[in-house]
Image 1 (cartoon, rainbow, N blue to C red):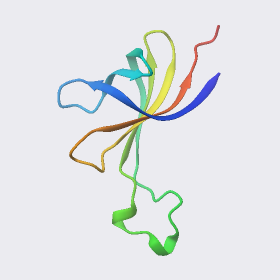
Image 2: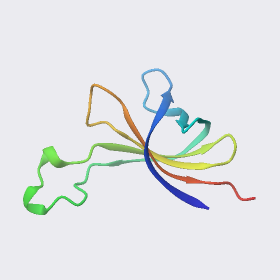
Image 3: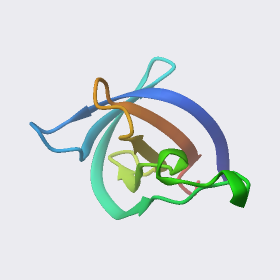
Image 4: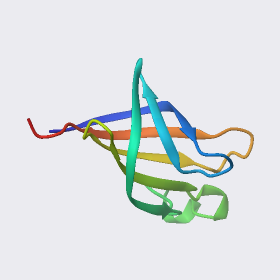
Length: 97
């Protein structure tokens, strides 16, 4: 079952790469076994057309990953801020029982 989380999380990456290796959320530590898919989101979301410009674009790199315990996580790196990496966990899908 997929559960919406929508919260900021701590993520460990390899070296200078933005690829996640560990996701930490509410005391749980999930090691990433596989990155299944990545994509970029540079859209405007719900911003009205009259207010859209390069400043209002999203700057996100999304990851769909599989953890070592079988969970599927959807998360993204908001790379609009250069001073710190901001990671958001969107959904967690539990493995089939």
